[in-house]
Image (cartoon, rainbow, N blue to C red; front, side, top):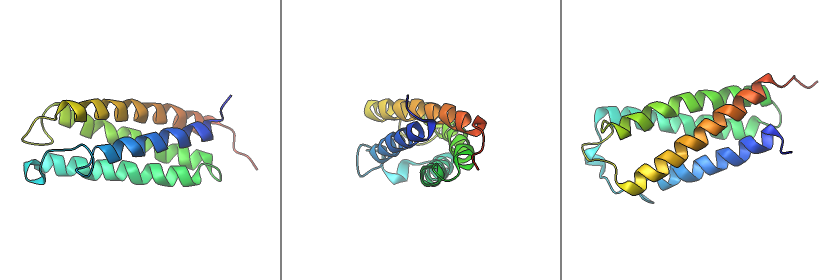
Length: 127
């Protein structure tokens, strides 16, 4: 059986891949000029989630409880931007199908991260 720390790393790597695909460098065709003020706030939350995920990825071997806490917070922060884009609050343009598909994959991955992160939080501390 895979250890929760390894599972967390795999899920974080997958989420970082989804996040890259959601950038203008990859699949996002909507111009910056179409992003609303709520959209800019959403981007800040997404970048915060990515930062927390990267820190959790690095810390998970040395301090799994802290890594779990950081990753769980990232999961919570990611839900708002996902819902906002689906409601049309991120941009003045609707998200294209390829973005919706990747956003759903990213949300599911982030929810799995949250589940594994909470499992890590419950593991007994090692001396």
